[in-house]
Length: 286
Length: 314
Image (tube, rainbow over all chains, first blue to last red; front, side, top):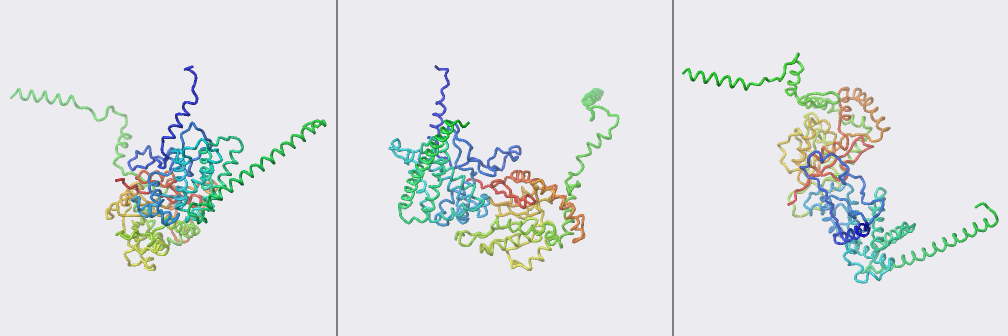
């Protein structure tokens, strides 16, 4: 008995580590001036050299430690974090970045540290809010005591609304961010970030589907979140009531659409089977 | 007395026994050995285009090249790059966005405007663009540029051109004749932005220049360099090489009447390290590298490299 491999052991251990670890926003890479030449040669081990953020693995496993929400270096994170409080006044602009750089003890020119400029600020906002959402769920702040009684659908809706409320402070300038994200060169990274968010929401809600609906679910949550974001920029109500109602309607639409798709597919399946069976009964080689 | 001389004789013989010959064995011919030993006395060599020259000579030879091309510099650049160098330079300046907009300035800051050092910027191409961008885009009338160049002829050309700009004879623009590898007249931690555009290729010791840049920059200051680099597409590279080695010396001969200088130019482009190697050199000097570290222009014909001096955490 003792020699039998106990598979659930490491899984449980890792999940408990994840739950006690705070949401990590800081990437621990720092370029030191006194590095030895051997460690300075452009190597692939240093993630800051990667052209595109590789924070998305092509697969998911509970056995792997979670990846950090973003790949900015310490200094970049310092500037970006200091820029966040300036967003409500300056918007997602280089002015916010400059103000943040100054607050973090850098010079005006140091915003050159962020090669994508304002879009880096947008990405950092999205990634850090995503990390915060995860942290909130893991600390039990979102679902509260009655987490067990909620269905996956209800949890998804709560999480989408929770994420939208995090944008409440910047909703007047959110159009800046939407404009930045819709630029041609920025679209791939924006979509990756949207995928990461919907993936996180579904994982945190406890969705375990691994069939073809995996894609459909992520697309549905992404579409609902992205459209609600646009609605939110025009929502004058204090508690984002209009946005909440919008999200509610979209989830109902989703259910209706799901029912229709399922109906159509079962109808097609039934008639397909029937036609094949009928043909075989007539002697067709199918 | 005799005892003393006997002691001396004994002492002397003891010393002689300790003697070791300088060469452990005797060769048939010692010429080869002698030439090997003599080598350290020779000067260190560096490349000047495809030929090797002593380090002390490179400076004067580069100087001769640029003295001879100074007057026709702009026309030649236009012809050689088909005018694209202007786009590169505009992009370079725009991406750096020099100058702080008045609205974003903290009211209590005593030192307003950027202190920009433009190395190897003799003709003022970059300096005037920087000042134009700062004044017209950011409405920053305090940003100042120091043009530093090792070549007096290029500086004279820049001075001549500056008379046509609004910055002539103002404290915003100054000229210094200096070697970028050693700039004792510029205090440490005093420069916001250090730029070197199509210049670092000609430096005798590039690493020394990078170290000097690291010294003069303020913590958080930016080193920005635009330089010819390696084309990444093989097909385009073949076309580009053909243009470089056939057309450019010919254009130089016809327009500037100086084939050798332009032959040196294309050879020095060929010898310059690749994007990744140069990024490693910037990093070696102590700079932080933002993102990938370089931006290719026109398929890698030129590349913009950036480095940021880290701030020391207190």
